Image (cartoon, rainbow, N blue to C red; front, side, top):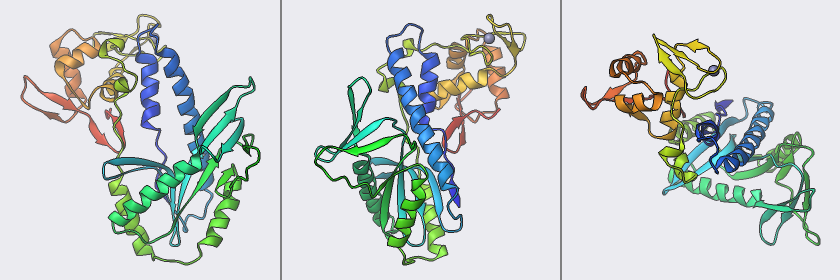
Amino acid sequence: MICKELPVPLMLILTEIMKYRLIPGHFKHAEIERDLAKRWAGFWGEITLATYVKELPQDKYLIFHDIQLQLNGIHFQIDTLLISKSYILILEAKNIIGTLFFDNLFKQLIRKNEDGSEEAFEDPRVQCQRLQSLLKRWMIKNGLNLLPIDYLVFFKSVNTILKTTPGEIADFSRVCKARDIFNKIEVMENRYTHEWIDNQALNSMSKILLSQHSQKQINILEKYALMQKDIRSGVRCPECLNIAMNYKRGKWRCPICKISCKDAHIESLNDYFYLYKPFISNSEFRHFLHISSNDIAQKILLSLKLPSTGTTKDRKYHLHPKGDSLCVLP
Ligand SMILES: [Zn+2]
């Protein structure tokens, strides 16, 4: 049973926003494009993993995607977590194409590119062992240390070639590619046959996990060492993606493709919440969305029915709490 669906990762959403909000010609564009490609690849890996996991017997496993927990101030994230009455399985998705060497000496994963260059990544098995240790300690702290915890590293593509550095014997027992995941899970099921808990304990474990899940907040401007002056303000056209549209007679009009629409400000207001803070004042709203009239800004803000705090003069409009993601409800 899927207890937590796979969301679009916050970091991916933020990098997408940065791509179109960063002022044209800025030297950080290349870095953002590179990171964006990596984050999309990572997300595709997680989507593929989620598709396979759906095929598992639904009555046997509780499935959690992108669960984020905290232990003594350490925030950790697990791509996919499976819980049965017999064991817990951490699944880490990887989407790295090419020939990959597991370097056991330095605990790294090296990709050899066709041009002879090499790229190093953290050994995903080491990454999983860290998650295994953190999750175990988290379980103990929450009185849930009832089941053995194991892990699997999942590579999305069958075309990924996995090797080990010459002269070494690699332990690929917890590494799989594509549909091989089902064989590896079968091995796990044969390893952990005893049922340690009943349905009631399983459900209460699920409730505690979901209640403790907390999305790590990310300050994307800080991450890329950017300032507010590096960000383009204004409403983005939903059709041609031009920034900025102009507000005239109750509608947003695009000077490039000439379309007009009523609610183009919603997406741009979400951009503001994502980039800066989860609330906005009337003057910040006017400045970010390029609205000159105080009354019009007020009218639009009220129409969004956002929760607000403060008096008329210093009123702040807050986004609706809606699960993991930030969102203005239309
Ligand atoms: Zn347009």
